[in-house]
Image 1 (cartoon, rainbow, N blue to C red):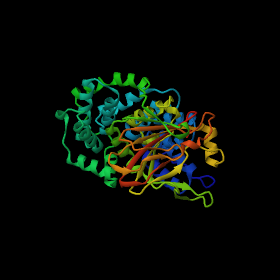
Image 2: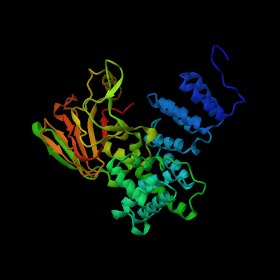
Image 3: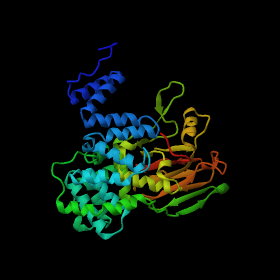
Image 4: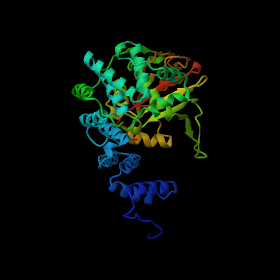
Length: 438
């Protein structure tokens, strides 16, 4: 002990060092906690490497992301499912440099081959989103069914949805009363639907690996998925609607399939929090004055291959790469919930907004996607442009937040009208003029 600071004992086990780091962090002794985490990581504890990576990602810039990736590459860290998942997402997005989709696929396929149901689900859904061949779709159905058999409730829900829609063959269907119940619960906004993610997300691999036959079948998806990841997504033109004063809004039908909407909502649900805002006087968080809803922001450690593929479709709608998109925000509105008229553009007069403008540029566009099928009311209304939109599940609304000079456009004033019945689910993606640095 020197100067009141306890140094790690070299004979202490990695697990005990990790427990000490947690206790020290809770006590506010961050440097000592960091020392113990590093010592535990040095002894090869994957959980310590993962925690250090998460800590680095709280800092901004590619240097912090590069350091996070180095921790995630340490020792047995790839054996820890959440760590492997995060590394794959960072490689997909090129957070520490150029995107490396093939490296990301190596990570995901390795965990899937060892039987991790969450990774089987990701590969299956990615194939369904990106590949058109009948053989690939059939393989995806078998992988999704296998993930469900291994306890992934979200895979069960998706399998039931896709079979009912005829996307998957009825021969592949594994009937699940639990899945159907969860689908109804999720549509109603019931907290029990969080099981769809909590029990079946990035789960630890089960002891038994995939059968050789199913593994060989899955491997046939790797090359076409790598090609799809290396290519920009197709951009549908959509329908342009012109409002008052010449303001233009685009409607894109089924930018996401309904099963993908279920996927995003299920992942976001356990992360939902009441919408709040920082009170500039008290410095405390208080309920948002113009938005009555719950929201969840999907940070890299909440994302996976499927959410990344879905999000890049949204940035492509305005001709930007994924790096220009803010984190996806999922909003849930109960009956009576609303988002009163507001602008999405940032203003330099606001302290935090001014910093954001300097760092990542303006929010040039907003993309909204409707996630839930069954709710009434909740239309997106533009009072100045005199436009109103009630989308179907999977449809997107794209609109500019700035005028020709790059200034906040008052015509973009919009609101989410009160929900009359059911629970409204929406996903929001704000697109920046520069790569987004969070």
